Length: 114
Image 1 (cartoon, rainbow, N blue to C red):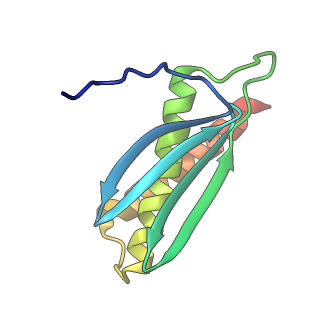
Image 2 (cartoon, rainbow, N blue to C red; image 1 turned 30 degrees about the vertical axis):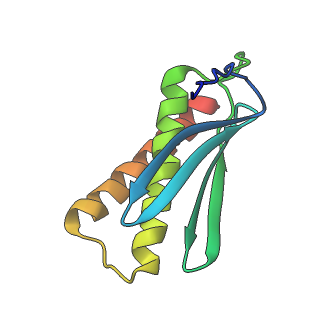
Image 3 (tube, one colour; image 1 turned 60 degrees about the horizontal axis):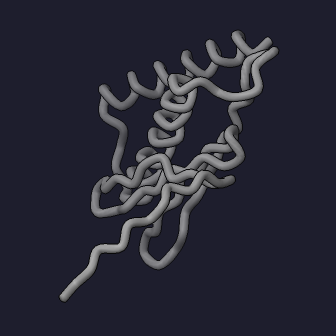
């Protein structure tokens, strides 16, 4: 007889936002302390990781769900670009346009934080 054990959802300092497969790599997107966003994946026996820091707007104490989603998307794009680079793939025109949009959105986020 098997028994399913239910677990409680625990909020902590590190939250896994998503785990997705991209070109045979499991990418983990995590948020730490509500403002550090990190990706982690393994490639050929090595672990690759990077992070960005997104602070709440002036006068706010926490990021909104929309800001968390945007930051998660930004760090996801960084992870996929790193994997593409490791695999020796060139950027397509579509990907180059995504890079331009990413750079514009980062500039826009920096302008709002002032």
